[in-house]
Each structure stands twice: as structure tokens, then as C-alpha cells.
Image (cartoon, rainbow over all chains, first blue to last red; front, side, top):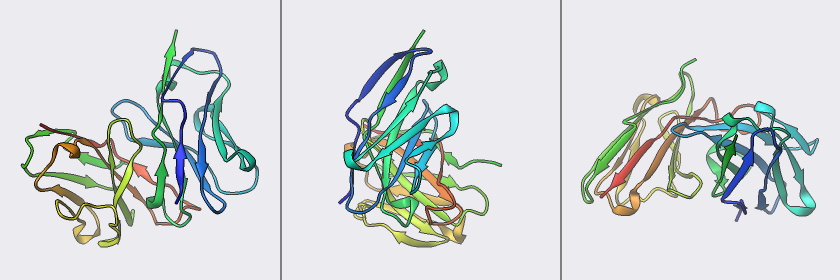
Length: 114
Length: 116
């Protein structure tokens, strides 16, 4: 069965500093991997996704993620965070055929300080 | 383009009461999902519809939860009777189709349910 682990429950970062959120997955085949962001009172928004090909994936809002098969990781990065990046971030792995079969991690809460 | 609409935004009920949530997906989206997001956890799929048919309801607690999508558009999710552990945010999402490759699922703002 597939699973997703986000080791960091909470991260505090200064505005303008870099951000990296960790995600480790367990899946038997080639995974489909996703990062979502959830702002307070909002639904989930897709930041980026990896299906195949280039292991460095660019997303919206200046985010990127790197797929490392050897480490079973799909870490999310942003070079310089903005106060508006404060939110909860979810990593998810897909079973392959449907958006409804996503397995989400528990999420990482990001706080941005001035 | 209007997003996925959900109502109500918040609901507080006593245990053993019933409650219903409503979802209006993005126009033209054939696939609709209901997710349950318990505090401190990621969302978990409860049920997936393709048009007005159920594709997957394997994680829906059918003894107390029910869902329908009449006419393949709006959907309602009902809990009867509610338990304390049903306190969660219920998210509705829709996508043009099921496939992952050339589309994405769009989420509503959710309904926060508190069972006391």
C-alpha cells in the first residue's frame, strides 16, 4: 500500500529566506507525486505534480520540487518565501489512474516571520 | 470560472444528530469527490462519483454516511447519526475526468463540522 510521510509538522521561516519541505513516499511502482497548499479557510490548491521525465518540477508561486527515486523523496523548495506563503502544505502520492486515489501526508504548517 | 461551491461553511451539531453537506462542482466537471480531513491529518477520500454513478466508496462508513449525486451535478453528503469522531472538514472536489495526466482536481473551501 502506498503511504506518504511528511516528517516536519511545523516549520518557521523568515520572510526572504529559503524554504524546503520534506516528503517521503512508499509506493511499489513509479509514483505520481503532488504538492498541494491549503491557506486558512481555503480549499487545497495544486502547486505542482510529477509523473515522469525531468526530476526537477516547476510549479506555481515560485515553488519547485525534486523527485529522488533512490531516496523515495519529493521535497518542495522555494528560494525566497513571502508572507503570503504561510499555509499548510500537503504532499500526496497517486495510485495512477484517478485523482480520487490520492494518498495525502499529514501536512507541514509553515509560519513566515517578518 | 466559478470554483467548487460548498455549504454550509461551518456546522455544529450534537452527537446522534444528522447533518447534510452540499457541493456544487465546477460546471461541466464529470467527476466529483468527497474528502474527510480530520485535524492534523491529510484529506482522505470518502467517495468518488463519475457523473451520477459511484466509482469508489470503499472508505465511506456506510452505516452512517451516505452520498448522492442526482443528475450528475450537485452532490450531498449526509451523516446520520453523527459521532464525535466525525468532527472534521469535509472537502468537495471536482475534475473534468478521472485521469491524472491531463487535468487536475479542484477543491472547494470545505465544511467544518464540529460534533459535541
